[in-house]
Length: 334
Ligand code: ATP
Ligand code: LTN
Image 1 (cartoon, rainbow, N blue to C red):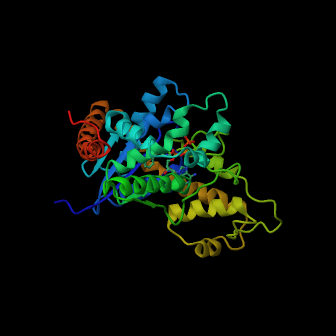
Image 2: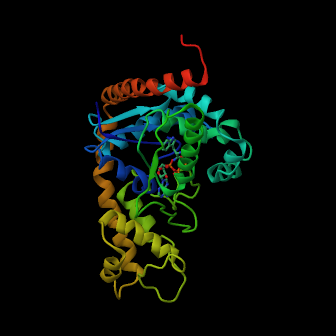
Image 3: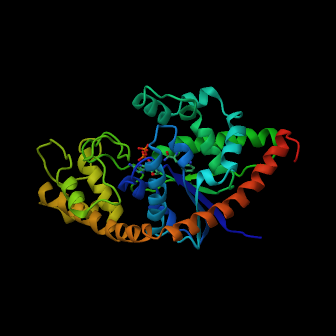
């Protein structure tokens, strides 16, 4: 029997991946392939909770797969798949909808944020999204779900739903833990350090994208909002200097240095030296990822072979859990 622990995560192909998605989530995924049995997917079914252009969604789903591989996820060691290819997600999603409470869903901050941003399309899917996310996770019985801090609430709801189900029917689901990085769990916008860096941000200067050209990345860092205090020194003080703290967090995450080391490195130097240094470190981190993703993206046959094999493996695993659930709730076996 396979004793390896299981890890699983997904990202919606609703926009181009950002430095936030990389530092908060993907960076943690590849590193663990030896130790864990890993499943990573493109959450295309989640994406349509917000209206998408069909051609753009298709293109971004494949681009995202190329970027996963370029970030170090070897398809030989990780199961990479497209959510809509594995029909068990929708099926378990429906069942779990019936075990997720209206009150719980009403408290989700992502629902509140997204419904405020999409006032003309507050659809049922946007509301019940966490039940589908719980299904995404619980189908694979994972031990850990590596995500950024904004997804902690959804992971906690997943645990509550799994515990509720287990309480009624016995041990069907493993109770998973969110796996949130110590540095980089919440990268903020470069133009507004009070809001999260996000792929659907309307302000193009707030987010840095994995596929962006080095000169554009550098320009965004040079223009990054720092703080209006008179001190103008590089010191980690998130409450009073959120812009500088965010840049320090990014620098720490890409260089592996501590906040004290960074303060020492830039001691006596102003933001005019610090900001381009952060930009340069990010450019050098993303350069190999961008180049590799561009190369992989040209090979459509390879990408197809990866997502087909991924869906086959994922489907086999997911089916085992789904069968158990169907039996427990009282569906007649076919
Ligand atoms: P959208 O704008 O479409 O809602 P997003 O950019 O907010 O998307 P995703 O890219 O879907 O978020 O998130 C993918 C993963 O990256 C999740 O695990 C999420 O927690 C993490 N993540 C996203 N943005 C950040 C961020 N700014 N800092 C740290 N982690 C992040
Ligand atoms: N909700 C996540 C994407 C997501 C996910 C998942 C993450 C969908 N299903 C399962 C981890 C596990 C987001 O919006 N970033």
